[in-house]
Image (cartoon, rainbow, N blue to C red):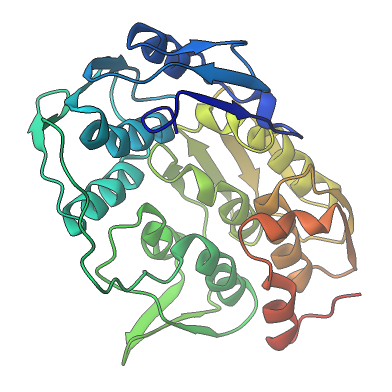
Length: 316
């Protein structure tokens, strides 16, 4: 917005004002933007100018996505990362979209460069990928309860959460592809170790799978999960324990031990992924699960409970 407008006001509610934007605000101030506040709500004034933007790569890939989209409009520039990039697939998706709309870029040792002002041009037709992040919930349901098949997902997708396949296979799940349909089937799951560095959004539902895996599952590399819609290391731990599981929080992940889920009451924490993961857990729990704040699913998957019911889930 700051690449197109001289003044724009942003507001937000819930946890959004608490999410970190300091690093992004700082580099934008260096390139001509003034802010009425460093947290939401704020008004940004001025016109963003091109140049070099130095940012950490381990806080939010959204910083990088926003600047990559702005650089062609403001006359070009360079994004230089001061730390290792995490959630790299989201940046890859942005770069792929830039290419589709006629924007070329140069990959640098620690970032990317877009030279000069460039015009976005429509490719005419774009087919959007099916959503692996949301598909992961139902594939996990198949892994712990029965056989679930999903169409519309691309095996060649660059989405990071496509890794749900390899994660479930690490647990011992049977995953098959046939005629463009992926099927996850119940099997004897076993504990494993999963690095969340590039797939942080999969933690809530993978933690549910871990409850049904013999032994112990260790999740690491997820420190950024504290900055999501909720502090997901805390809220996933609370969700699992509230319904009879055995989860403990670490500095950057979780330890989940095999335990039959008995049901209980879960605080959705205003977090769409906590709500959907709790629903998947309910499908295999011995007792009912009550989820407060279930409307949070509307952020990413408004039809979730409709599809959950279509697969045999009981929702009231």
